Image 1 (cartoon, rainbow, N blue to C red):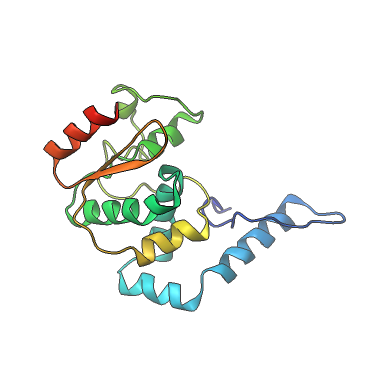
Image 2: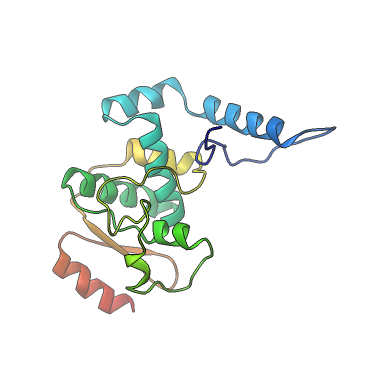
Length: 176
């Protein structure tokens, strides 16, 4: 009845006996509910984020970040872009639309019509694009303020952050 994506906590589970898919989903959703503490829920409210919005943002961070230290900065870039009413332009949402990972996205890929296309549509996509772990959820809730507005990953998966578009273009040239 409801989309569970984003709300099934990624973890290691021991499952013995005769379990149905529904039982496993309930267990994973229950774990998500336990992991999202009252303090985290209060922090989301203080940030004017619904739990669904928190999970959507955390799912973007989960899919974008390859290195742990990049998570909070990526989260802050997305929060800064939302505040500035800029499109999020998350490559992870394009990969989600495509359904299969693509090594390098094209300009044409960013023009695919979908409500999940954060290049065409401002704001958050209509739902999570995966199940974020605790690190990505915490990155959204507890990232330090920054004035970064852009990021690009190098071949090793490390992200490089920029404050201005001009700076971003220079960084792209350097990492490619």
